[in-house]
Amino acid sequence: RKAGGVYYTQELFVEHLVEGAVGPPLAEHLDRVRARAAEDPDAAAQELLDFAVIDPAMGSGHFLVGALDYLAAEVGAFLRDVPLAAIEARIEALRAAAAVGDALPPSDLQLLRRLLVKHTIFGVDRSPMA
Image (cartoon, rainbow, N blue to C red; front, side, top):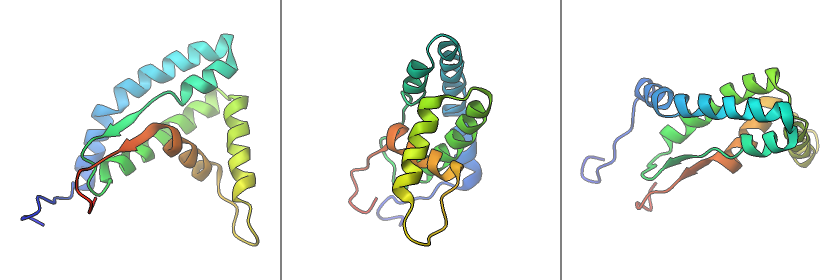
């Protein structure tokens, strides 16, 4: 690992980085979405997904997984306070697409995570091993 410059960030550091790097801009973003929801809920739903977390050297993706966990918790709490019908419809569409055979149905949180990872989480790395 050392020869290849491969290091894994410990969970405690990932949480600290995510809270510091993602927390404040996400809080501002959610405030804007909340204000927009009062006047145009459909536009607010679109704006909710117009947030990006980018890791240009993602390696194992540990930071991005931590960011997704953080986003899902914060956005989930936001949606409990500010329900957006368009987001609920997207989650229901994901639920319908996931309904296969006798498999356990995914939870709302799992479906929200899918929606967020499709729209807000981005990572690249020059290493083919990443």
